[in-house]
Structure formats: C-alpha cells, structure tokens
Length: 83
Image (tube, rainbow, N blue to C red; front, side, top):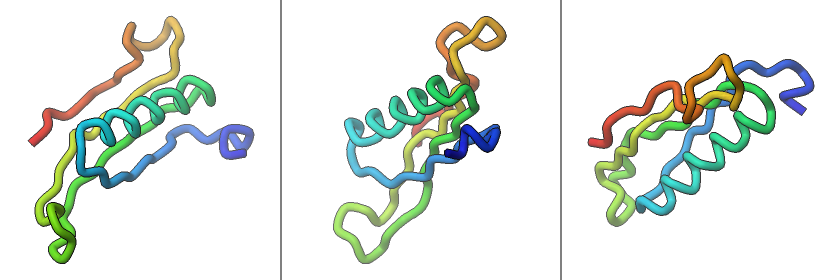
C-alpha cells in the first residue's frame, strides 16, 4: 500500500540478538526495496537494561536500493561496520 502511495524510503527498525536474526531482517529489507522499487534503511542501536543479554545491543545499519542499472551492482548503498 505504501509503494502505491509513492513511498520513497522504507525504514525498518529492528532489535535482534543473533547474527541470523540480523541477516533475516537485512535481507528482507533488501527484498522489500527491490519489490517496491524504493530505498530501504534497516538499523538498530540501543539497549534494554532489564532484558537478559540485551544490555548493550548494536547491529550495523544498512541502506539498500532497488535492483536497476542506476544503482550499485549489489543494491547496497551503504552498510555500517558492526560494533
């Protein structure tokens, strides 16, 4: 519905505690960018001090693009280094 309303950027906030969880969110965000011909930004930073193993949590933010000749070959505009 958002793509039909000419959405330009899809923001995908997330909180995962494993690399597999991060990979799932990141690749699904890229799939939505490709399917809807828009940019997608997926990222997380923060903490949940009262939740076990989530006191300090960071995953890299990525900006992905649709797949087309005007964009980079791998459809990744930028990706932060994990901390």
